[in-house]
Amino acid sequence: MTWNPFKKNNAQTSSEQSGNAAAESTAKTATTAGKGRPTPKMKQAQAAGIRPLVPADRKASAKAAKERRREKENAEYEAMQKGDLNHMPKAERLPWRIYIRDYVDARFNLGEWFIPVAFAILILSMVATVIFPTNMWVSAGMMVLMYGYLIAVIVDVALMWRKLKKLLIDKYGEHSVAKGSRSFSYAWSRSIQLRRWRLPKPREAKRGHFPQ
Image 1 (spheres, rainbow, N blue to C red):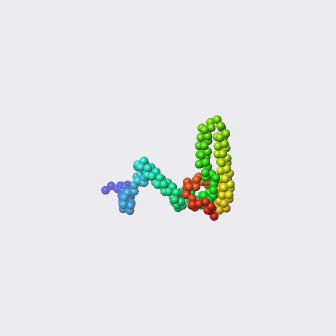
Image 2 (spheres, rainbow, N blue to C red):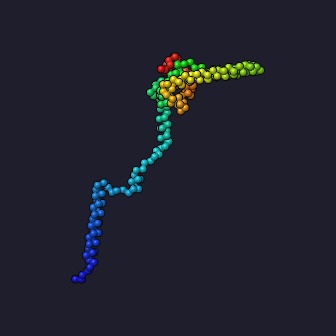
Image 3 (cartoon, rainbow, N blue to C red):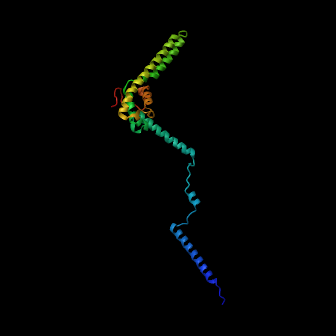
């Protein structure tokens, strides 16, 4: 028998390789048994988590969203007609806006009749021009009357806002009359509308009920 000095080393290396293979097989079996399935690759895992951001039928989705908005707007409009404060738009439920509405509705506003009066003066001016084509004083008098009424409306709105602004600051603070609140435009636009046409509907049937 010939002595081989590398025989022991070869046998040891082969034994180590067999042990490593057995360990890898055991770890793989444990992983599979623990999860019930092999660990997926990263790309597969990412692909499985992808969800479409755009609906399959965008036209139908947009139509459904439009219908929901329309139903909400109709419900809010109906609430303003009925005076249902709980279902009005959020902006109309602000406490200082409620106060502005009650204050404007309680007083007699010169601008309330501005649109009908201006329309009537315009019609009369046209009729006067046809009847008296050579007399310009009639038309000029109508225009003076309309602009005089407009100036009176502006003065009335200014006086109203001067008092209302002080009341709002005392009750709700400076933010209620800040530029972003649009309280002034809200007050004067309501004051030049006929009382029966105002939205939200006045809470009191008659004038004179000023808010506390």
